[in-house]
Image (cartoon, rainbow, N blue to C red; front, side, top):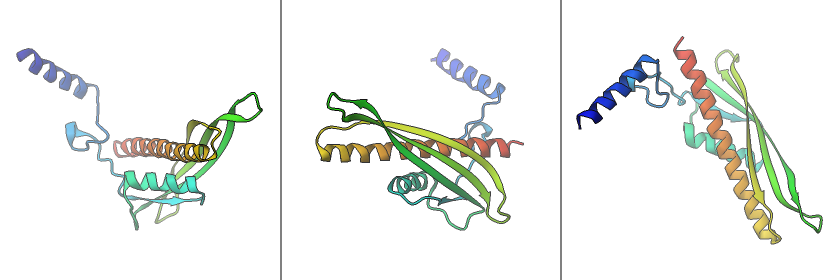
Length: 165
């Protein structure tokens, strides 16, 4: 029992010494005060997959309005066939979403942060038309969720760096 307590104490001291600050636990170990509640999501496109991305971002950040920052999200998606069968019909597809993000100061209109994320989902296209539609819908949801996770991570890193200066 003493060795376990000693190990935990030593680990805590090592992490404190290296400057580790947990991003998602602002009060633990003197971490940075990262809050995504002060950002409103604004989509620049209006397709189904764009709606899924906006929904995924709002699920993670909250449905905020009248905030000091606006996150402008411009997604572009395309599908590319990967596997071609003997009958010259595609059997696998890649769904790629390239998303530009801009964090804008709502008062001044200045862009304070700009970045890009890329997410990919591969899916199979069975011969059954319903199966293909279901696989596409699943890929749309997966690529939107992955893009939202990457956007949240990039925003959290930006905010952590800007508050530590």
